[in-house]
Length: 560
Image (tube, rainbow, N blue to C red; front, side):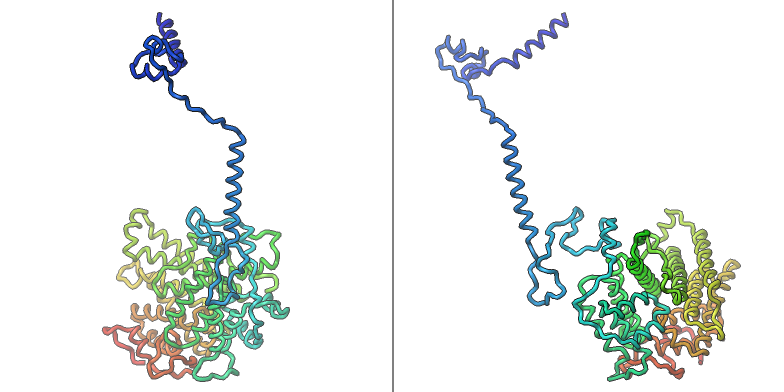
């Protein structure tokens, strides 16, 4: 019975679905209609039987879809042609020598992240969002760009010789063989880089007269700054030129040194990120020698910028611009096959980068330990201060061990200003690491006090040796010049003050007072010229500005 009922219900539902639509009169009366035309009820009642007109469906054909797609494709082609032939209108007030050609296409759209495709992009850029891994495009960008539109520069061979004798030995950002190959074969050379080399080398060119109170090399400095304003894209040679402009400002005493160097360095940082100098690029056996040289120049330039960044940021109390623990950083510099005679300067540079990396890690540790903003994060992340300190200690010992195994501590019979700067940097790192735990009335503080005192004594010993050998002029060649030496000496003075070493403090204060008369950071009195060449004699007058920085009102100024 249940099966029959189910079948009957299915049959009735099928019949209902198959029944035609009722006529209009039957629907109004709400009676059953047989669906005929006319229906039985309308015949019996003798009324007009009408039905709704059934909608006529259009036949869907393949030809209609193809026609629509064809018209849509034609419209898209028209829009694409219109966009591709759209050019940026040229400015009316600026010359077009460094602008894009009118024939170049402009992509007037944006990416998924909103980046404008019409903005010049660098695939090597380290802070690119999203990151880019198109290695073929990256290798194309590594190729050096030549500004053939520049007028041929005047080659000052004697200034180039001075540069490679004094500056390049501590700041080897150039590849000397390829650089001279460009000059000798009349290949295009960056004009701004040449002027930067000339201005920084003019300090030691005693044949150049000083005119109108301007320091030596001032005309080349102004030319480099003027050429810098004409640059329209980041280039490795421009970064190198800016580093040398920083170097020149270290030689000239005039107001605004700290601001000016910070201004130029911000440009350097931005260009480094755009060029991706800190990006690690893996080379293969098929990499051409030209690309290998260019990669090596990129590495050396980045590590020079990194050393500047760490030194300046620590002194100014600001965060570093480059975080090597968060970014894939470039490899260490290396000696190329055609630089066998210059391998000592490259090794010294590698040793410096290792010490500065230790210094950066120590500074980050000190910020995490002493900054109150880190307290909650340290507690939540269970930061292990003792283990971190132990790791930093071992890291610094390893770096100093490599330094002492390669070069001995400076002595009068074995004097090297490169070695002097390396040992000064290592002593400063030692003081930075141990000073927060030193000079306390606890047994655990005694070893840290000993490390700080030993490092401060070594700084005093090195600086005394520099003065006895009359080698202070050579210290201008080091990174940041005399100003960085002042920073290292200030650390030793701080240790002598806190440890009560009065005799050593007086000796080092005499050195500090002389350095203050040549350091570019000390502002001049109104009676003196706004620019002057640093003195080379040992006669000096005590600088009250420096004394006020070293001593508070409660501390007596030593009679020296």
